[in-house]
Length: 405
Image 1 (cartoon, helix red, strand yellow):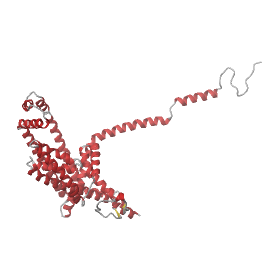
Image 2 (cartoon, rainbow, N blue to C red; image 1 turned 30 degrees about the vertical axis):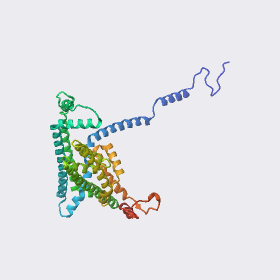
Image 3 (cartoon, rainbow, N blue to C red; image 1 turned 90 degrees about the vertical axis):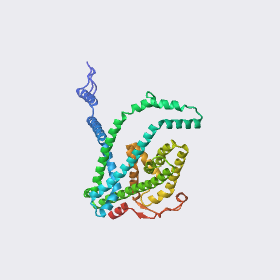
Image 4 (spheres, rainbow, N blue to C red; image 1 turned 45 degrees about the vertical axis):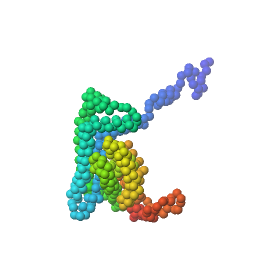
């Protein structure tokens, strides 16, 4: 007799029950069908990718405008103390702002005009007396290094219409059009920045009222305190830099005039400004131009000029600068140098210049945070000369926090 399978045993012919086959099919379908969250994740990924591309493209288009606004903000912070003084004397705020900005524009225009005149004069002199300068330079090289370069051959090569020098000069003629276009763009940018700065200063009280109207009273105290500190410290830092630039320009102007250096006024202004607004290395960068121009006439005088510039920089660091910055805003050279490098890496030359007032403002805000205490006596904290009495005091942020409690 045929044997019947016991209940629960698989069929003899190897077939499986319908319920088991259905479970296997469902398992296969579940493995082949992706979970619902994967579809959503893929959609979110592509939406994020598209949004990132749109934001990056928009940033590339408006990054120049953002840079203009940042520069205008720092100009507004720098000139607002002067505008406030004029406003307290009865001037209308718009007229006071316009007067201060016009004075700044006149000073910048005077500096650019003097430097442009000097550069044009030097180029014209080099072109008209190129043979003499080449011969003198070749003679100095021969005497210094014991070489036997033929000066007449070098002059002939320089004046040869088919020579490498003239070909290079001819190839650069097309750069004049490009430079003219860049100059026009620079004028548009300067006008836009000054326009933004004008409205930030002239309508400063109205802007602050609009911002504070959205804040609680205790938050308004913090915002207005930070704003006032940023104005005073940024303006004070730039004021101290301009004062040091004036002292440096007067000193170097006297030295350059006494040493019979060409264009002494323009070179003195150049050294004064560059040495103050480029930290640490600004003095040595500024010294290149007067030393190079003097070297064309006398290498000995050029060495003397370089030595005087370096000596004056040391006197300024240890004698003049502490007296001026003690009442305004002092910025440590290492902090200034690091900030300039960071600004240069992020935003280029404009960032290097903006990094200095930004660092001064940040340092001022950080110095007002928290409470200061007396420092315990230790060999690690001993100073050669104590210049200020650092006792327990409260900044405006601590006063604000105390008021909340």
